[in-house]
Image 1 (spheres, rainbow, N blue to C red):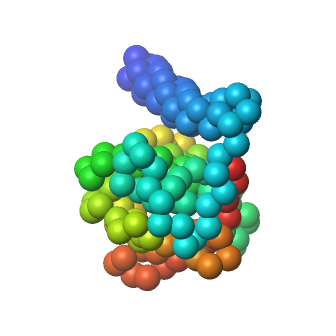
Image 2 (image 1 turned 120 degrees about the horizontal axis):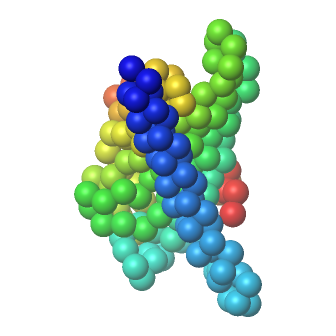
Length: 172
C-alpha cells in the first residue's frame, strides 16, 4: 500500500510540474516578444485577423482571468488560449479555490478545438479533460464550450449543454 501511495504522489507531483512548465513556456513566449521590443498589436473583439500560425483569431489568444464566488468562498480561474488546429489542445484552464469542508482544490483542464472558427469567432472547444487534480475528486471533466469575444473586450465561455457562462478579462 505504501508503494502505491508513493507512486500516486510521484505521478501527481510530476503532472503538476509539467503543467507549471507548460504555462510558464506559454507566458515566456509572450514576454520574450515584449523584451525584444516588439509590442504585440492591439486587438479588439471586432478584429478579423488570424494569427499566421493557425485558425484561431488573434483576439482570443493569451491568458484570461475569471472568478466564481459561492458558499465555499472565492475561486479563481485562469484560461490560456493558444493557437492550434482542429483536434489539438487550444484551451488550458486552471481552477483554484476553497473546498466546502475546508482545504482547497487545484485543477488543470485541457480542451481541443472542435471546428475551425470564422475570422471573428466564436471558438468551439470540446469537452475538457482533467490534467491535474488536487484532490482529484474535486476536479470533474467539463462539457463542450463556446468562447466568444464581447464588445467590452472580455471573453465569455459558455457551456453548450446547459448554458452556464463565465466571463473572463484579459490578463496579458
